[in-house]
Image: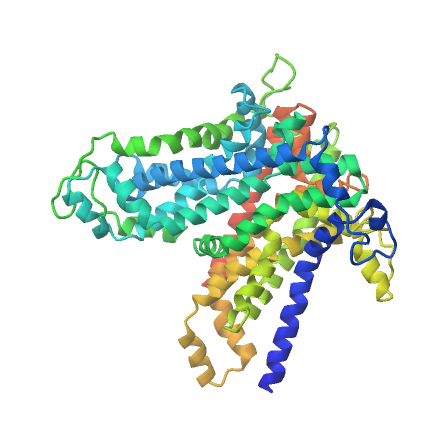
Amino acid sequence: MTTLRRFTRYAVLVLLALVFLTPLVWMAITSVKTYGDAQKIPPSFLPNPFSTYGYEQILDNASNPVLRWFVNSMLAATLHALLVLVTASMAAYALARLHFRGRAASFALIVGTLFIPPTSLIIPNFVIADRLGWLDTLAVVIVPGAASAFGVFFLRQFFLSIPAELEEAAVLDGANHWQIFVKVLLPLSKPALATLAVLSFLTNWNDFLWPIYVLFSPERLTLPAGLGLLQGAYVSDYPVIMAGAVLASVPVLILFVAAQRHIIQGVSRSGLKG
Amino acid sequence: MADVIEVGAARKDAPPPAGGKSRRGVTVRGSRATPYLFLAPYLLLFLAFGLLPILFGVWLSVHQWDLQLPNRPFVGLDNYRDLFDSESAIYGDWWSSVRATAIFTVFSVPLLVVIPLGLALLLNKSFPGRTFFRAIYFAPYVLGVAVIGLLWRFLLDANLGLVNRLLGAVGLPSDTPWVTDVPWAWVSLVGVTVWWTSGFNAVIYLAGLQDISPELYEAARMDGANAWERFRNVTLPGLRPVMLFVLTTTILASANVFGQSFLITQGAPGQQTRTVVWRIVDEGLRDNDAGRAAAMSIVFALALTVISIVNFRFFRYRED
């Protein structure tokens, strides 16, 4: 009976795994097919012949500079994650550890914006970015998103869970707040900082709506925004489109495998806050 | 949210005051300005791109604000009135997008609340390979909407797509127009979204399941409760706060759908699958009417707020 049960459980688990994985596997397989091979009905399961056609098309392409998009995305996501870490951790320290006039009010105001759908800020933020002269620059995909309240909220909760006693030795040594923050609190918060960094990187890397409206020049696009162009240019030349999709997936899948624990913990903690 | 404030309040006297004394009377060096200096970098971002846009959005919405024209006259509530006036030029497109968003939300939310719960229950027991399967179910979520949009546009291609070929292989109709005709376009958009984000909700449920005390299950078992009764009387009540969170965030996420319809159905057939968010950005950033788009955003945000509040009220009421 228990053997049968265990068998059923694994059968269900494997079946579901196939549902979640097959599309991704198909993307990878198609990216190494030739155009003709991908047009066959019924489709061949394995590429026949194996071909780098799709990748050649996107890696040496003047009107769709995919490598440039890749570099732009990498730069934007990295700088965005850094900006979030620095600003959110400093603000969270003030809100968790320091007393000052207006603390409760500022925290309430910041948390309040968590409930406003970010899409409703797009139009005014576009006009603000335009006034700043940021449209069609990398800054416009790095900076505005860092105003999100999530990081401050997340790190403040983590800082509050660290016993204040741990900072006392530093206090006795005459450390000031900056030293306590940098030398005591931040090292103790590595897991939370890693989680926030990874989540911020992922969000920025994957962002689609904002970049397609605020970036215009082909050489300034991020990868997701560029993929939209690629779809328009290659319509049903699927090996090329799938090669682009693979290129956009590989970094985040590697990050997912390497930092799975941080991502899963970050997501599950976001749920417990409710 | 109540929890958060309580945690802060309970700890109010724990941290050492700025420039003052810690609990043991040791002085931390720092001036009155210290807290504000820590807060300043984030606050600058927050004011410029978090708070200002909210107020500026209201300002835009009461002006005829064409991005290309220098003259931006005050028009009062005209932009709002146009959304509800069947004579206005944008009335049809606007309500068609509201309809599209409503259809998508009504069909996707129940599936995204129930299916992930099933996945979480399946993964909740400890068995070899558990972390591995959890990772696989979560994996699609780490990919952006651009990737999954392009991928599913291909998989759902009526001729070359894998979906119709697989259906054909098992003797089902193999010429369904998944992305170009209704109701199939809805099935596609909802199905892809379930595939994409179920793992995310499942992980949130899993954390909630692990917070339910094993003693409650033990007690139920001693009372002779079977698996279904334990689920009904222990799991579901224990999950209530997490479910409320999942339900609320999923409604918000579904209502904000954009990339799936932009890339997979591309609005087709006609403009039937064009969503509210798409309508707003098109109105504001393609047709340059930022005032009207801002009014749409505000009506949309208010509607979502009302839905969230009703949601909370309903669950709180049920709890009493």
